[in-house]
Amino acid sequence: MTDTQLACRGVAVSFGGHQVLRDISLTTTPGRVHALLGPNGAGKSTLMSVLLGLIQPDAGEVTLVGQPFTREALRHVGASINDPAFYSHLSARNNLRVHTALLGLPDTEADRVLQLVGLQGAGKKKAGTFSTGMKGRLALAQALIGEPEVLILDEPQNGLDPEGIAHLRAYLRDYARAGRTVLVSSHQLGEVLHMADDATVIAGGDVRFAGELAELGPNLEESFFRLTAGGGQ
Image 1 (cartoon, rainbow, N blue to C red):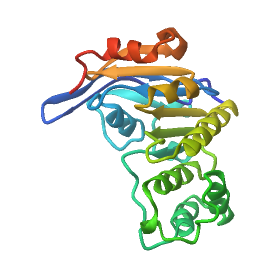
Image 2: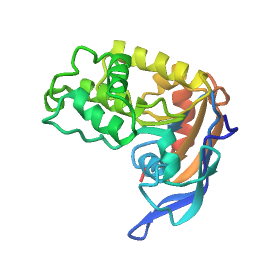
Image 3: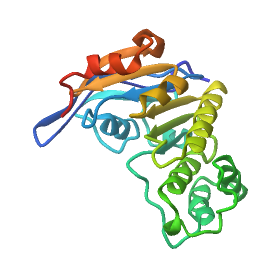
Image 4: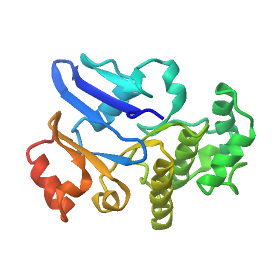
């Protein structure tokens, strides 16, 4: 296990002359859940896309599984960002089998992750018939294929019922405790309090806080509003 499985330094991104991210640095710690927080338009999804190599930054560097970013290193990463698309005409299981085949894993891996997210009884149903919450669970199952060292999740609680949110929270904490890295974005600050160990807060394209979540004090909402005041884009 490396000391830092996921990090970035000095990341800057602009679109059409509009600066979205400025000199962003983020460091995660294996064994801990790291929350990426910020208002709408702060650049959270853009930063996650940079970490996954989906967007080339104007400046900065990304470290993945202890080495400078490479496409090969993405084999160690599971991710769900920007509402991942599924083949609507395929069953949930067959959607996952597409990914297990690409990774050289047996079909039983699809069954394993379906069970993990509570979709074992829906594996034969077409993904196009799924509710928003079921699609969220399927996206998480897809990210968990192969038990990746690094897990990057953008708003994974969206569409989940309270039971599903509680299950997700417990699972992600256990997943990280096994020595893996979990980076998750969320607008549900109350849930973040129960789930995350560390946090990076960005607003207006800048880092406003980076450290242990407990450092933000007992009232996370108040601290969040103070840090992000005027930080929307």
